[in-house]
Length: 433
Image (cartoon, rainbow, N blue to C red; front, side):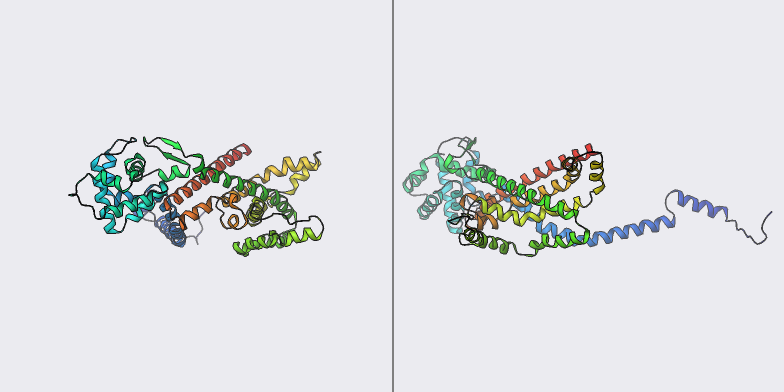
């Protein structure tokens, strides 16, 4: 029986079919408004993160790209000595002095470089490859300044009269190799390698090898600092995570306190502590534990101690964030099943804290690889890391290509380390799953 108060309306058949068709093909007004709202939300989100993306692009990605390009692109010699570069590029790579046309081309290029005042730049570039070539090149440029093609004698004779070194293949090998672009010369130098006259790789003489030892020292110091931070940070993070929330947050302020102090101030404070007349030696002498001051600075100990203090918060924070999420009931359950405290900790608690260990180790190690101020102030000559030599090439010797190559190798090492870490963590997650 129908309700007399209930009124029903029947839509026209054509309108119903139109609405049904729009809904079927996804063109209903509601869906269109929903898509427009989602599109506006995405545009607002992109607009909000655009300044950050632009900042990262300009301050991080662009400089890294310029560094990598600068490490393989060096057109200085080919731009200043174009005739010589083209001629030497066509000659076979062999240990011999080229013919007269090469000397004539080099003479013309030297005259043009002297007029354009660019000869000193080429001389400095050649000196990076072989010590003494700057003096040889500039002396020859001055000697060629007044030379004329109509004068008797060949160009080769004039070069040899200025300096007999031009009659040896060494200088021509350097000219040919530095005139190439792109070049792998900077990376070879960063690996203590070079090309011989036949373009074969060979190691530098033992007295000229430097950077492989520096790379090894940098990695070893970073490993020592990482292990020291882990040994100190793990029990401290465990202790903080076991505290009540209010107490733990208050103690975390002490952990974060170094972040609010300048890096230079913290390093200078270690100088006050570790110097011969510093706080540590004075206290040990006052207690009668030592008779003479200990050498705590300008050595490996000072570098490791200073870097460990500065990087320790970067180890504690990931560990604390992971340990705080581990339920204490797991360890209690293991104890109730008969496990000893040590067994319960090692087999139940430690595996669950490994993500924090991996993140902290990776963060501390990567940061330690690029440290400069602390090793420079607290370490000796045999304790300087790769960052010291990169800064030296950028500011003193102005060998930006080699500095870029050294930085590129450090960047490659960090990326390889990150890939290995991701694979290990991924495999671990699969096994846990």
